[in-house]
Length: 490
Length: 85
Image 1 (tube, rainbow over the protein chains, first blue to last red):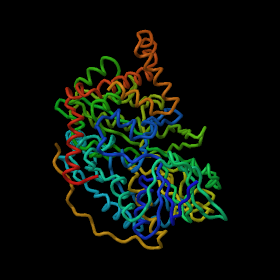
Image 2 (image 1 turned 90 degrees about the horizontal axis):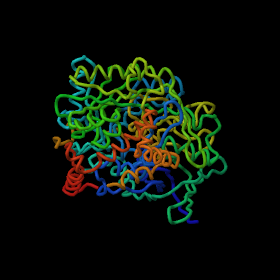
Image 3 (image 1 turned 120 degrees about the vertical axis):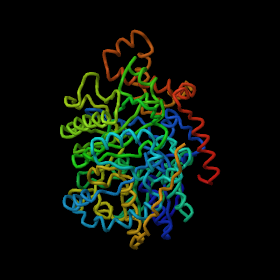
Image 4 (image 1 turned 45 degrees about the vertical axis):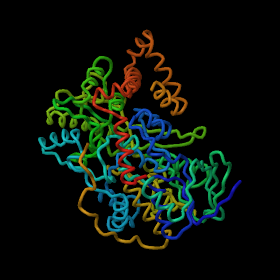
């Protein structure tokens, strides 16, 4: 077994791990990052969804939950984690959510004011800017037309992209490297500051002795076992895999909450056939939102993709599917995401995650309302036909859980933060209750649904953790320049 | 190209792999397709997978205005021009 020594060992190089690695290494700490997946080469990004799903996603983007309905849960794997394959949407944690965390979970230090420098620092590092209408493309224009006709609140999304040309395949590997995922932003910074990044590292255990972290043990692909000795360990393996690693290590189970409280932001999408050419994959797929119903837990955000992606998600069969796909250039698509009150769990079965999640009636009701609103939105935009993701003949008002065709992109909460050791796995500083030096920095610590995309929340919390370990305050950043760093769409 | 769908299925965990292969085998045979038509969710999944494979074909995608090779080539050119990773 080979052995390495570090000040901090980080498990995972996604939204949380990469950010913590860069900030700690630049702050003078000796950092080792262990990433299970590979380093992806942008030269091999082919803009073909089927090929890229097999290559960039964990289990070929086929991770499923067990329950009614089963939910597809695509997760990225490799340097950059899910930031490599997400849509790049950037929202700060909503103030109402932070207030709830303070009241319900005792996380009094996580105020909007305290997190402001963390968000500012991440936004600057990732070149976060609002998408321009030109770059958003015709798919967003359809939704905007509908929202304006109905008087619904809407806007263009802020994204971590620089020099984007609207390639339309954010979820399948950005061929221009315009999306500023952590694999091309924070990871190179970490390496430049001396951090050692090891890929193909399957971390088996977090080592603890005398009530504090001692390091981790891992198996390195083709190189045997490695032990990294470190007094600080940050677990950032993602909401699904972090609890499994902690369970294997016999850690974090004191509250009984490890692996529980799984929130997902279940989502679905509808299509519409328009009179005009839409070419949904030309432009930024997720560039526009409608938040009229956000207070009810219903958020609309753009989704789109090339023909093979649309063919898989179009909720039709047989001749109707073929007929609609023949008119792909006039198809528009928009997504619906629910801030869920349902909660699931994750545990290990034969070394693999078994994810259970049952959609509660309250969330089914949100989907009923959301799908009815989606139909209104497309109708107001002038759609000739609307294809809702429901079985033939089922109206939104009568949809049952088993009728819904759902995906989810934002797993959260399986090692939730709570100031009370009896209620949470980590405290407000993201340290495991009762074990000094073991921290969690990924979606697992987020104690509730956010109602918005979580990558900024995860990165801001990781920033705060890193500066906490360095014993420094997070420096305030000057405001971002106003211009959106983008070209016209091609 | 025929390999892409198989590689996609092979990347999945074993229960899905076995299930999807069975589903596709049924969908490709007349009797199997008739059986699937009585199971709408399975029918839609099988149809979706076959359609996904069909529309990943470059010639078919191009006829619908999507040229993956051109998108990837433009990306490579821009990355080189601007010195991006």
